[in-house]
Length: 359
Ligand SMILES: *[C@@H]1O[C@H](CO)[C@@H](O)[C@H](O)[C@H]1NC(C)=O
Ligand SMILES: *[C@@H]1O[C@H](CO)[C@@H](O)[C@H](O)[C@H]1NC(C)=O
Ligand SMILES: *[C@@H]1O[C@H](CO)[C@@H](O)[C@H](O)[C@H]1NC(C)=O
Ligand SMILES: *[C@@H]1O[C@H](CO)[C@@H](O)[C@H](O)[C@H]1NC(C)=O
Ligand SMILES: *[C@@H]1O[C@H](CO)[C@@H](O)[C@H](O)[C@H]1NC(C)=O
Image (cartoon, rainbow, N blue to C red; front, side, top):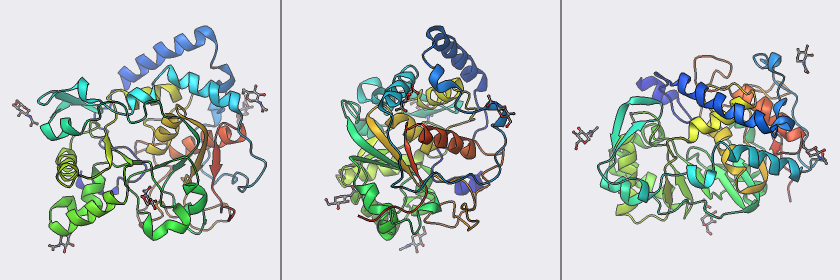
């Protein structure tokens, strides 16, 4: 268990997928699918991935064209996808639980382990946003930054920072990699396990200070903490929340709703994308469709080599290895990637996996 915690990483939401409620999901997915088929609006998007190919693709795919190519956004497709996704979830609402929906002492059943519960503490309740941090927000262009080593030597930092809204995953280091990944972040996800892995569980003053400095560098970014997925990280979340309050940090904590992950999975399942659990990167793209007119993805490359055969690190900032094609883990990142590539070619999003043009 401890080992899994450590290996569990970046753009992944949580780990211990022990008693996954597959049946519930399948049922709600079917229900929604029936509704959607009823008025036939999903059709354009339906056949995206040839399902007889979905399990294959162990090889490294062709790289999408280098940036600066003839990619153009297809705004009507973007609108259609936004509308489809809204049938499953509304990012404005599902991006965070709000204060009025809980009170201290309430019991929450963990989303992926419903037999275990969490008590809502005073501290957590104090930090719940009054309204959704995305309420009425609209952006022309957004960047969703994954953490693949493909970003190293990309020179994409400047381009990433030039978007109107920048989403980053799992509190990945930025300052040391600024030229390739950029500095700006408006929305930063953080799995509770990061606290253990990168900040010693906040057990001593040095680690706590390092963590506070990291959060200070985020200014008033949303800090999105999936606190209700599985038991195991609650002490860390409490520690983070206490520090935010004690130090008066300006990050804006948010805690995804209990239905978010199932709703996102349901949407992709309805489009025949058979993922066990969406990666944080796919989750962020799905949320971003609600409020971004153009979505640019960077740092998505779930393969151990690039198209020339050079090794690519799983994360740009550490040496963790990942078995992309293993069926043991909860994610299907190569399948997700294939889907994103098709969406790129249709102009629904832009996927950058190569170097960026320097300004
Ligand atoms: C799906 O892929 C299989 C195998 O690659 C191919 O034989 C089949 O024609 C494809 N179907 C469609 C609808 O593209
Ligand atoms: C944009 O996407 C829609 C829906 O898939 C399609 O019908 C339309 O032809 C596309 N437009 C362009 C310019 O590619
Ligand atoms: C939650 O609160 C109840 C009642 O206050 C208590 O009995 C229970 O042990 C608490 N559970 C946890 C996990 O702290
Ligand atoms: C925080 O603000 C500084 C100064 O405006 C800026 O340079 C930096 O990029 C911001 N950090 C983030 C994470 O957006
Ligand atoms: C704090 O803990 C870290 C490990 O998380 C250790 O490397 C460091 O030496 C400790 N610092 C102090 C002052 O105890």
